Image (cartoon, rainbow, N blue to C red; front, side):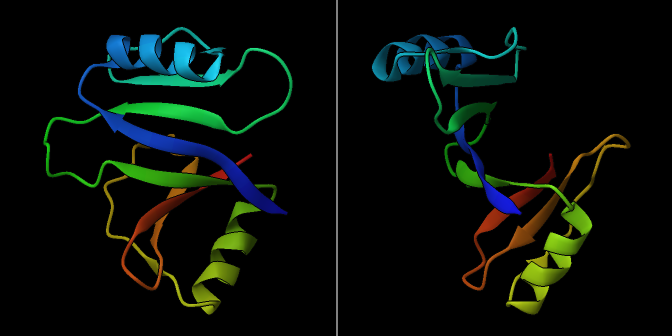
Length: 113
């Protein structure tokens, strides 16, 4: 199974974005924010999480989706068969995600649930 688990929003100021989006959506921090990353979830009930990612360039691709997968490897292979392509990416050793490009070149991540 694969589903949209998070919308990743590129921002220039994490604290300001947390304040704004928490109030705008009635969301709360899932975990304490770091200087370059924060995850917001609905204050009550289900809903898609909003991940805030610090970006330094106003020209960066600032937004993408994270697909959460029960079997990441199988889903990545299925998506490649459907027309995605693996992105050249410098992964940290503990990465739980794979970056792909959709047929139009838009990046998205498949995250092991």
